[in-house]
Image: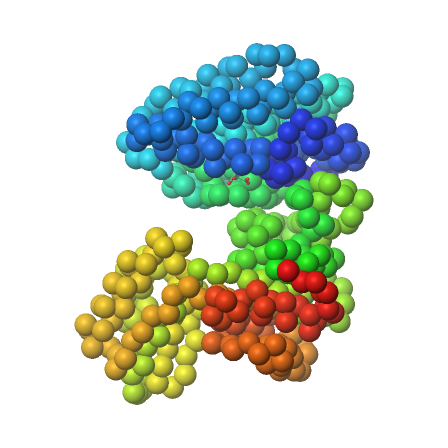
Length: 456
Ligand code: ASP
């Protein structure tokens, strides 16, 4: 049985950090046999920028590319790998940049995985420099076939058989298999990224393929925190979460895991351990099918901003069969996913992501369409709302959680614009004016986990 470990951008940001990873983590436990690595922190953004400039013949992509190559050369030189260690790989990146395919997303998918590829080569060489038998396995070599959706592809289930065969063969040869994360290939062998932050998902797929005894996700915090450290100073880290709690948190803004990471793990019951590369003695957060009851009604308070609320009023909604489905079909037709939809007798609200402004036109258009179809007496849109999500399996059996949450908010003089207690009873979502979001998180955090004196 093997442990699969994944190192994110900050855990692989330069030679010194990679050295820590090699000596203090990978080689410190011989079960760590499959290693997934992300690009160095910040590189994917640079490659996206350089690729976009190159594609539209605008700006100075070569300057950015030189900077990217220098950063990797610096990491390689930390392990004395020679000046030309990455030359063939840099050439391949330049060929991808010169291959002006039809469609910017397809083009970018062909370019940006190089950040991961360079890092995988350096990490494997660093492991070999310590005497380990390490080898890079590229997604295209181990059968990581996707559905071909550029920008956010999904792995095809059939891929697991090939991945299993390739990786288990590597393990039986005593190798450490190093995988660049973040992408797979379509039926034509073209790179397709699995989404931003998706090296997490590569690690989960590899864990599934090798039946890992544990999937370790190494990042730069002591596991998953009870609130965002930009809002609450030094929030506690969480010892144990169930898969469901972790998924609620990943989706609701605890930005430590890609939200799809748990899906392959859940079906095989593989546990995930979120750890800190810079504090490896800290146990981090364990996520699994169940957890020993710990008496906590609430485990964490996550938050997200950038939502719009489309609010409709119509007398008699509750008697109109099919009303909601007519309205939601309109949102679907405009490509808007509905995050939450609280209702009462004569009114309904739809909370939708603004997507950094990208969805604004669609939101206005859907509201017009609803009005033109005569489906409302009144419709309004509130932009820039924030959602705070209080998560914990334990709230199901604990009376008074909503009272405690709303009491803490009342005491802090914060107005709740909307509140939804999800049917799973694992989650209470509250909507706020954007100016109140941070204070709301702090008030709820402090009510449950003590006073975070000097909270930011
Ligand atoms: N490097 C990729 C990104 O920035 C994937 C990852 O970091 O997981 O999205």
